Length: 433
Figure 1 (cartoon, rainbow, N blue to C red):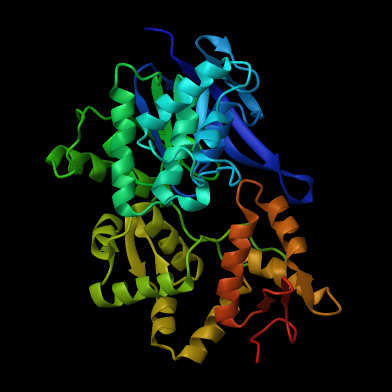
Figure 2 (cartoon, rainbow, N blue to C red; figure 1 turned 135 degrees about the vertical axis):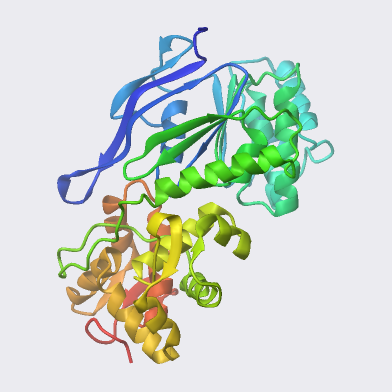
């Protein structure tokens, strides 16, 4: 067997947790990235996909394990990789040309060679004529083209992409997927292999030659599938649909194993430490409406019925499970008696039911305890963000806080002043007047 381009051996990653402990995000990851392939990493939210990508690039030092590049142990940043970010990450004060040039090390080329290379990649990604434009003048698709050009400017052997199309509209996303594959398949392209993180099964099947399925808590590799479909790929071909179905089943089994049951309600102060999905309460209520009308549905059938990606639907289902409105025996989504009670209630009763339930979830209990310990019954959001960052080091604390605020407002558990950036109560924990 030829030497892998990149090899990950027994990699684990932990971060400091609340109370002096640690939180294991990745556990015993073993994976090879071979020459001339596109590898897509898929899995449920929170499984450590982006953490794994950052460790591969060298942006984070793993707690345990080793990474080898062309047979040599990697230390620090891998200069043969480049990263395309989800959120563009452009310098707003630089032009397109200057942003792309920022991807080139100053010592790598003389000025004439740098200018030539920058122009080449600008042409490669279809930005000719926009060299002097600033990011504020660009559409989302054009901004991501700049990010792609910046990554290509350094002529990486491994192009890494962290959900690069998730912030784009459907048509722009489709166009850029095709363009990336076109760049990859060109004989003149410096890119040897592509490693991408994606939440979209369709995107993975459309682009990748190999698909890695991860499980969560902690992140592990559950399955690796080859994708033999030739380029260009037809999303309507039966083989394309069959592979998507297989991946749906694998990810569903990973997210909702048959033996999994929701944690029982615990006494205050003994709640299981768990985050909350980044979805709206309205979407979870909408799921109840669908189940009321259609009865229980298998997850794959439910994705087709509501027309959303499986990754997003899993978050909604997880939220409904946290509320004890739904269960998922064997991947079948069913409404519970508590879900039916909530759906049948009037708006004020719904708020009371949700208020009581939220107080039995760790993140809401955390905020309520901080409020009750404050003489003014208010807490600056910075203090809460600090606690969330300590408790969930692998997640974005601001994302968690925004979801907490939205759910709590609906349930009248506590309030938020966006001008002063404080969370406050007008009375002790309970339904607000």
